[in-house]
Image 1 (cartoon, rainbow, N blue to C red):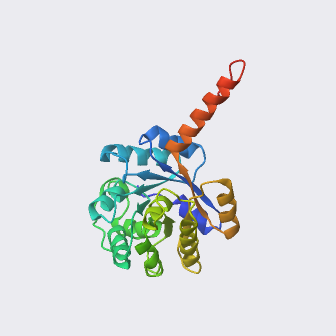
Image 2: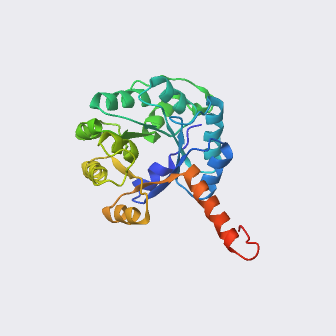
Image 3: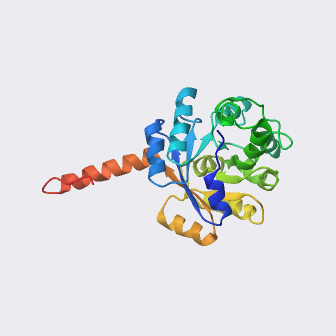
Length: 262
C-alpha cells in the first residue's frame, strides 16, 4: 500500500536528506543502504539491466528498511515510468531532460488527474483495493517525487522553463554527461561544468524545486552545505564498495598481523 514519503517529509521539515545511487541491483544491498541510515536510494534502470521482478523486490526491501525508493528510468518513457511507479517506487528520476515539453510530459506520465494523465491500476500500490481509489490517487499525487536530470547544454539553456513546470520536485545535474556536452568529456571538475551546476542550483532558488547536489569530495560537500542545499546524493554503492574493499586490502597488506574488519 502507498506509504508516506519520508524523504519528502524530512525536507518539508527543513532538514537535509541524504541518498545513494544503487548500481548493485540486489534487494540485500538496498536493505543495507536503508539500515545504514540513508534517507533515499535511487534504483538505476538506465544503465543497469535490472529485470522488473527484481526491481519490485528491491522496492520491497527499501520499504522494509525505511529508505525511500526512487527509480531512475531510461528516459522520458511512459511505459518505464508507469512500471516503476506501479511497482511501488515513491519517485522517479528522469535523465537527459532537455526541453520544457519533455518536463511537462514527465509530469503528465507520473501524476494522476487533474495534475497529469498517469494510467490507473490496482495491485500493491492500493493494497490490492484496501485503500479507496480516490484516496490513493490524491495521496499518490502528494507523495511521488519527480526528479529531472539536466545533463546537456540544451538542458541548461532551457533550465528556467524546465524548472517552472508545476509538479517538478528536484533538479539533479549529471556532471559527467554535462562535461561531454560542454566540450570537456570525462572532467566533472572542469570550471565550465562547475559553473553550469552552480547556475542550475541558482535557478532553483525561489522555486518549489529542490536542488539535488552530488558532491564528489569533502570540499564540494562543505560548499553545498554552506549554499543551503537540502538534498545530497552521496555517490554510488558500487564505487563506494570498490574503494573501501581496495583500501581495506591495502591496510591489511601493510599491517604486520591480521586486522579485524569490524
